[in-house]
Image (cartoon, rainbow, N blue to C red; front, side, top):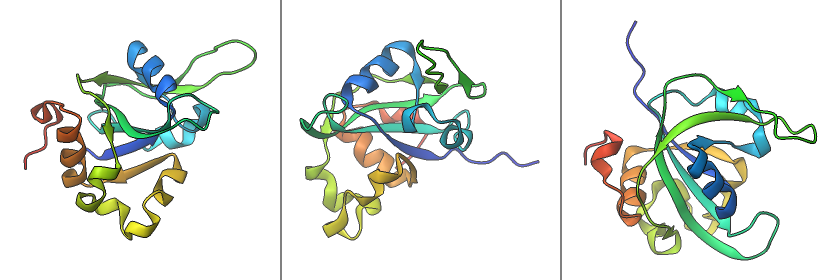
Length: 151
């Protein structure tokens, strides 16, 4: 059976939540829902976009805040208290700095048409092409060789 090539995903979360996930080496999406993570596979690449700095606030950040590769294993749930049991996947995050999206808009295929560039982020998790991954990864100062993408 042929191996499916890795996909590139953009997940959406506030920067404070992304920082918690990076520190733990995990990703969560959609407030811990399992279904979106079921589409993500080991070896897939993930970028986090943070519309805000803090969850629930209106402190606009509009930046990519993390980049990494999904580790082997399946999605799993973790009890966090108070009945909250989110689903996660393990991720190897790479050294990178936040990169604002606005300077990248003309170079990103997924934001077309430009007038509605933010619409896709409402999905919480969506796939993008290798070129978009490279544009964002380079803007973040990540070593894109770690991503296994040429270009």
